[in-house]
Amino acid sequence: MHLHARDDATGKPSGDPEVFRAFLPTIKKATDAVINISTGGGGPGVPVSERAHAAHMLSPELASLNMGSMNLNLSGMAQRDREWKHDWEQRFLEATRGAVFKNTFEDIAWILTEIGQKGGTRFEFECYDIGHLYTLAHFLREGLVKPPLHVQTIFGLSGGIGADPEDILHMRRTADRLFGDDLRWSVMAGGPNQFRVAVTAALMGANVRVGLEDSLYISRGELARSNADQVRKMRGILDELGLELATPTEARVLLDLKGREAVSF
Image (cartoon, rainbow, N blue to C red; front, side):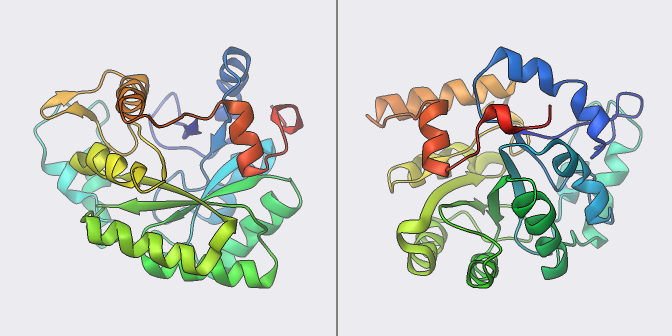
């Protein structure tokens, strides 16, 4: 379960550990699922120590990690006809046209050292383009990461690789060549590409991720009511394809996680 947090008063993304502590124990008590905390919350311009503060302090089993700086343009979402809950939201999205999400080699090394090596947290390595796979290979050679590698290849977001089947194949071939048997390949896609790319990649042997961070819809023109809506739909598709779903216990073994009792929440 990949989690971000928002400040109750403003609705703004937050990396504050206390905001996460308000809900993490409830989720942990209710499910055996692996809890995965974002290190990218807060948006462009937020220092790495601030946006990764929750993962640093709470030491989850798994945390997401963007493998590079990038132009992540979400401004098209600001033009949609919708009811905005907070007055900053539309401006925030529009501003991404001129913003860069910064995650330099120095930033990544800090997260891998402080959260990974010292805290025992493993990572969902988010790779939005081919170069991000090579960045991960660099840190593997440096010894800052160790196999197995949970590599989340991401498709169809403006500023990253596209969502064509050839793009999926290109990322898969490159990841296979760089990581071989150390690879635990997973796929996600943005917006209307979410389910199509997930199914295409699942048939190639990928794990898949769906959720409201990546798309607000359950089908064409129909908003999802919850993350569970999307997960339930994806599970149904995978079941129909005859693909087996891992239990949380099996996932912990596949990703070599430290276990739910070794976290700080």
